[in-house]
Length: 218
Length: 326
Ligand SMILES: Cc1cc2nc3c(=O)[nH]c(=O)nc-3n(C[C@H](O)[C@H](O)[C@H](O)COP(=O)(O)OP(=O)(O)OC[C@H]3O[C@@H](n4cnc5c(N)ncnc54)[C@H](O)[C@@H]3O)c2cc1C
Ligand code: FES
Ligand code: FES
Image (cartoon, rainbow over all chains, first blue to last red):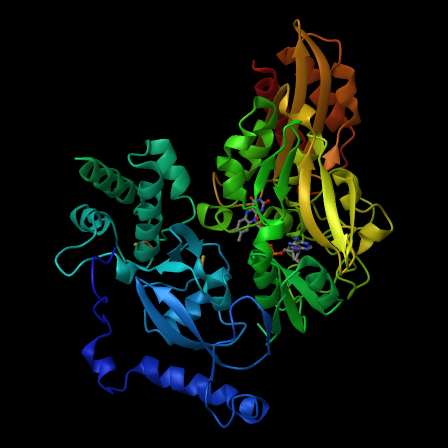
């Protein structure tokens, strides 16, 4: 999605400039928790160990390690444990909170991101397994000038109520249009079948995506 | 999830050597992470198979027509594969293309799909102890909530086999290739599924250090027609409530070979021996309905899953008609 240069940092200024947000507090608190007696030796006095080489060797339990994830075209470093999911790394580690956590079990689609272009439940993928892959989140779709056509169509069709399912639906729709161009209604339903909207805005969502597909083709 | 060590082996032999009772293989981790989050499993280490894509990935077709599906091939890759375009292999493509959701299919591996653990809600909850998880003394579904449970082959536990990929691979005569240490072996896929008494606590016959390498399809599988049909409560997302995979040879208006395997109705994928009675007959709806009635007459439903007897017949007839091109 990015054309040139590094992507703009979309972190709100209040969080960037040492502002104390709820999230940065939680993040600090969780690092402190694993830096306690059990993790102290392993993390060498609280310092975070850097990258194990990808794909070889053993990564110990209960240790924070810094890994590099390519997110929205930019390499980002984030400290994770072996058990950290990609979803938690994005939300709690990188402050990319557009991707939502609802069921945490692959059963709702709110956490959908693209991994190498494929729609993926980030709640069921280990962050370590995302190293070396191209990750696109909802924050990576718009350019500074304009929303992504699918986002624009969601706005125009008023395709949301509470909006909690929306980022996941938009990511699945982007993947679907990438694969099928102009999907038939049946194909669209099949490709969006991994997302649930509790508010029941399905009709408008399908209309928005169909509309976005039409525009992309013009 | 409790903390665990993550091992990234650099060969299949190293992966096999690294595994053990408390050190389990992880492919995409979709089933495994679910079990860890629910705390029904608590291994010390995960042995990551994803770095072994060179050995365990890929769909390959040999000159003699046999096909090799690497254990790390995803359900979506199978659904979209040109190498599996023959009508005889359609059941496999359909089963993988209908499983779960796009987000699951894009990562879920063939090996993990075959070896995923069952979905019985008593087994899947740390709040319950049942005989199958080895922590209790009986099957709780017998006198509990059993609407998704088995109607065939029940010995000790009412669970059903959840895999979409297994029934079509059974009717296609697939073999699985397994490696332990440096040694490889091949066996019919049916040998992957345990009989009583092993079935009381196990859902497959692999040892803790056995790596599933690949699934092989014989050249004959591509010939003839095949189809997979399933019922479920929603049109998407959920595991099947009943499923049927069918492979038929038809020549000169007569059925020359027939193979049927049901899914989601028994603790293992459930082959239907009666399929042989179709050979020599002319395919028709009446013929298929008679067979379906005979097959499901032997079902032993429990209190809440009688619907599977009716629905399962309809699904089987649909699959037979589609495989016969009717
Ligand atoms: C919402 C949802 C809906 C679903 N619906 C369906 C459905 O309709 N039909 C269906 O069939 N499935 C369904 N599934 C299940 C899904 O298909 C499986 O969880 C997935 O295929 C598991 O593959 P994996 O690569 O993630 O395996 P993992 O979770 O990594 O592994 C699963 C098990 O297999 C073992 N294992 C994996 N690979 C190997 C290997 N090569 N050698 C030895 N052992 C191995 C692991 O040790 C583990 O115990 C659904 C899942 C979700 C979340
Ligand atoms: S939060 Fe991942 S699918 Fe619901
Ligand atoms: S808009 Fe509320 S869940 Fe979809």
